Image (cartoon, rainbow, N blue to C red; front, side):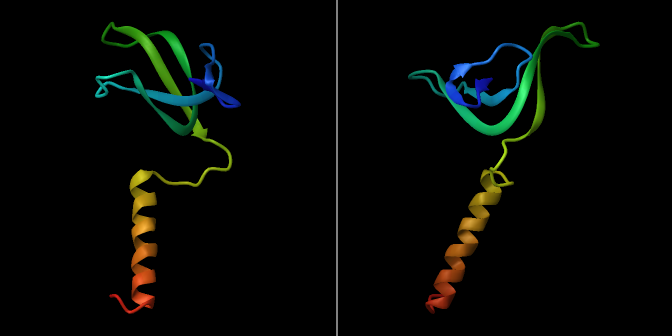
Length: 91
């Protein structure tokens, strides 16, 4: 979890922050995906199966960000490009 006012800083367990996800596919250096979502971490939570660990509690999207995900935003982008081409007579 990152500080919403300065994403270079982490927040403590239980504090609200911007969700950052570690990307294990990056092999040259640690890579994180900084989302536009807000949540907090709970630690020492137990599962019925007997395992213990962290739990990510999702709260909401960050205030002021567009609702959607990468796929939705890409679809909107493609639709706008296609509209522009249709107006110019390309489609």
